[in-house]
Image 1 (cartoon, one colour):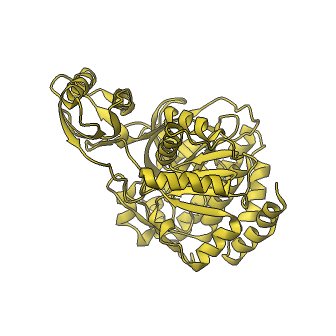
Image 2: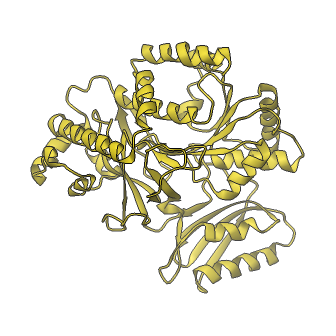
Length: 449
């Protein structure tokens, strides 16, 4: 660690957090101790915090006070995580309908936040300082797993309006002090990617951070054009906010000459899990309870696949209890070679809308179609939209030559997977825009999950 990084991580950033009223420094130190507890000790710690959290919101949050009374639910009787199943699942519609009643009495100053609404369901919610402190601390802990720290040079390839619109003088000054530089993921044109590559070479960051799709596109660009960015001393590439596909991981690692670390979470759900250098996707179990539920909200057997539901134990000011993330995954039962006792997510397969349904009702991950298109050299970019059980819209950036044969090949392969009655509508475009958040979605299903 350089002297400057020590100054930033040990003094300047802690001062920044203290001025904002955050206790992230002490929390990070606590998390770095608790991560080495045994799985059994962590489970007991989590259960105790769950009881404390439910007791608090049952006393101070009007919505949960009324709900607990209606269900005759007493938080003091919670003796296992399975007791959470006595409470209903909560999604964006429930939170939108009861926003004011979700605020804790005496909560003090709450910050208003919103999700990007990639599923067509944007959400406005509120965060208190305790929650923000814990989310910052959990991310900070995971960053340090990779031998990098706040204050090390960082390039961020991002597209969220919250970040891009905040580039005022104070933000610019802070980023200069922290040695963080932000590049826009909205416009991934060849000209912009050349500038990004040149900036990365000049800045020589120790870490990159961004969307998997944007970083993979940049990696593909530098590799295809013979540029070299694997000799800069980059230690790790952090990716988050989209599903990380294995071909993206391989492409990024080959181009930048360093490992990729996957992160999972969101503005609404919090900092849920992060990958360690041993490959384990560790859940931030001190603050987050993760459940896996089936199609009808029932608990899935250990190791089974279902929707990821979270309870964030530091959201007492505006609770997220059994919150449906809309993501599909499974829990891991094995221990990670790194020795941390934190439980593992074994799979994060993407959003429920990343899945395609065949005419006979069979559910397939969008990868079944993605891999068809990835093997076609004429196809540069694509987006698949399932309109109905028998109709797909396919946006393509592709060479004009041989389109008739291309369409016949794609249609044949898609029908083999989804049914012979399938109709594929082809739409050739010059570029496929990213969403308002800057994310990119390869597959969008308009069918109910």
